Image 1: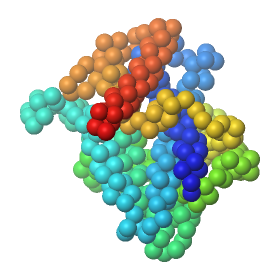
Image 2: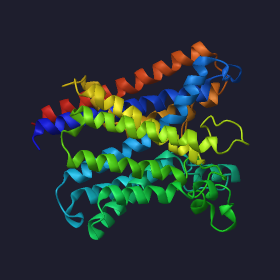
Image 3: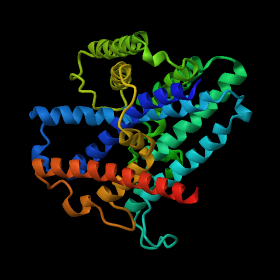
Image 4: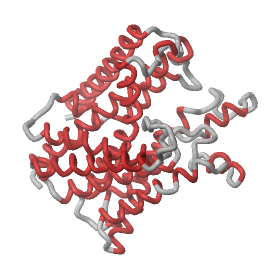
Length: 364
């Protein structure tokens, strides 16, 4: 591929990454601060926000899998010689480390004498960084299996994704603490406080790898209407499939797709992500360049994620906005704070990029 082709590819992917991380920033801010009296689904604005809040994590995870696999498969080397393997392992370790660091239970670092059981449970709970880290690890394992067994990425990634999706409704009902120590059990279910156990959440990351691999093997396919239409059709069929699944459960209440561990929700969310991706890819066909700041936001999702969480929820070393005003802020003030948080994260990325540029200028 030419450098121009690679640039176009990054534009498309960065649009999705920037959208996902900014959605996560405003979602965390609103969820942490908004007063309970405004959290009513009778309010159309809140209902829409609540729906998109449920879609943010699948979008973020699917896009992470897409980006990682896209870059991995751009390197035309066997698995053993692919430099992305070493980078991927480092990324896995960094994400898991940061995930636990954000939940570290004490500022004393090595002295756990004052740490309560509740704090330890919070520390060992699995959050999005650990989940994505392991998701990337499973993507590399899938890529290795794909090469050695010559199954192809699509089949291998699909089967690996289903490994995490199919058991999830059953795993969620098992008390894994009876069989495994908490740090391990928390990766299997949400019953002990984990927000994103591997089942089904790792499935979104691995399934994102299918799209990433396809994009790497077909450099300019996203520039065609056929690509966008296929995504829209597949996504729409999955949404329809989720509705059909619900129709066979007439004795149950109508699904609002809020239960993350049921098949109807999982299928719907994957379909929604594909529809959104199809829309973004269609829009990007007529775009040759985007503002530099959007690309920078897309490339600095980890930094934005870590910093905004420390500001909102705090850490063992600093208080957060939640400690000061948690679930007590009126709606308009919450909106203003969310916009300020997005602005702050954008300015942070812009400033760091300027400093890096100046440093390179001084070095040269």
